Length: 346
Image (cartoon, rainbow, N blue to C red; front, side, top):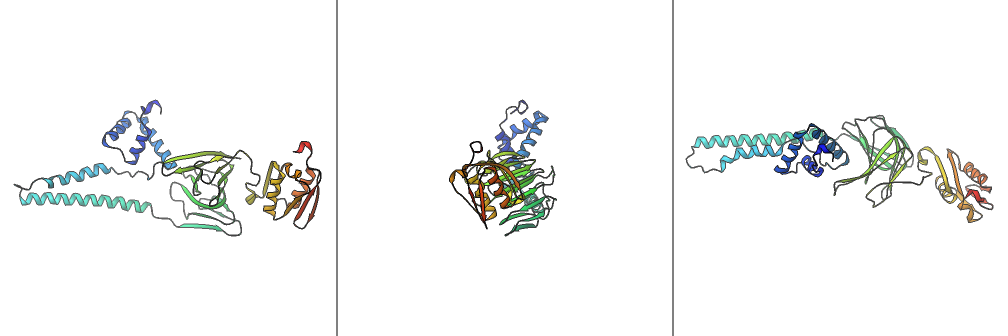
């Protein structure tokens, strides 16, 4: 930590915010706060950071429980003294004070409970579900979302809290309206994605890797370990993809390009030195066709080309022309024959 922090331990500050410090440690933190006005700002910064990343969970409630308990204890001390020599009227007065003190404590607790209930009343949830078709809709904040087949998105009818939180199962493409005061957070199960305003894709199918691809802006892709109270994260910028593999504790940045990353939403293939074996696998998957070759060497050819809204016939024709191959088509069956790649095309 920097010099202004006087080498105070951040773990002690965290426990202080959670209300877990003993008198001595609490006094140490409060003396540190009084020593320099910059220390209070630094604690506020750490509190905001820990709230965002889940370390400060549950968030601290601004009530001094220790002082309330001390006041309650003071009211009951007299009841523990012997009653000899004390008039019935004195006992009655003390009992009345105790009863009033207990009632005040009950009112305090009830007030806290009522306040929490008022601020945690559940807002009506909306569930957006895609069956066999891709669907699109506008969210309460004006953001646009496109939901892939067999996917589901849940979100509140109104974003009334300090964050715009959604829960995703499956795959969705988001075009987020900018609002720096209300971060946009997608809960993808084992991981979360946080943005301020951008376009990005999240794939979070059960028991598969979670994949985040950013088109514009930047996002925070993070995992919160609730047991260790720790967070592992990566920052993804435009053109980058991050994944969280099943069983992994941390997300990682993907270095190889994924040609069909967003094909489901924009019908675009972006091949960059991709082996034809992989090209044909994608074409068979998305166009429901069958591709065969006269010799296996053809599958080692590497294609660099982009296709937007192109049908299978055009893509296969471009492939054949690129490598000097002969293409024959019959219904959904395509066959490529020839001598394979030239030396410079592999």
